Length: 227
Image 1 (cartoon, one colour):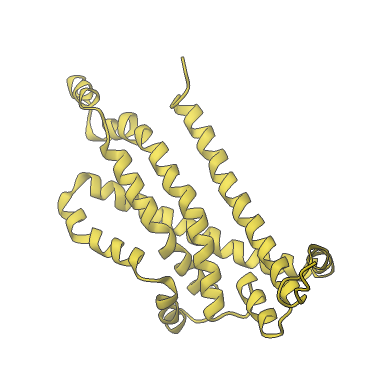
Image 2 (cartoon, rainbow, N blue to C red; image 1 turned 45 degrees about the vertical axis):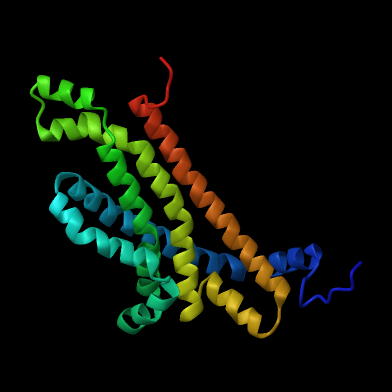
């Protein structure tokens, strides 16, 4: 209706055609990108949660390392990716590390907050029963931190996906970021949109999988469930 040329904004029908015709290629690159995002996410969880536990028990550790966590957050990932590619190559490892760097901040911050925001009377009750530090952590602090932890994890799903794609933009020979950039050079906008739709779908599914795990854990610990 507005006479917009197809390479500027293709019609949905053209995007659908490219999705069908290039389904095999898009699926392959989709698997590459999402595997990088998921592995980066898991890496951030394996590193970020222990850091949050350490911060909970040691103010000195928090004062020493928290500025570095903040520095990772405020430094644009696109500025760090060239160093990661220089050190780890254009393969999967540099993409996983980029995804982990993007995802770790909300995990550390939200988990630390969840471990600390305990009602004083609950801590006093645990002390009155002579609970050990381990028992207090497992019976009180960890269950209390679950909603906060998953708040950070759900944010991290999006950030890890962004980190993986940005790393693919800078240097890669596979993945949806590589696919989008390649077709940009040839002004194949419909294929770019098709790749973007696949990326969005993967991010949405990733988010809801983490949300489903959250709901199961909340039910297990009876958090947010009315008696």
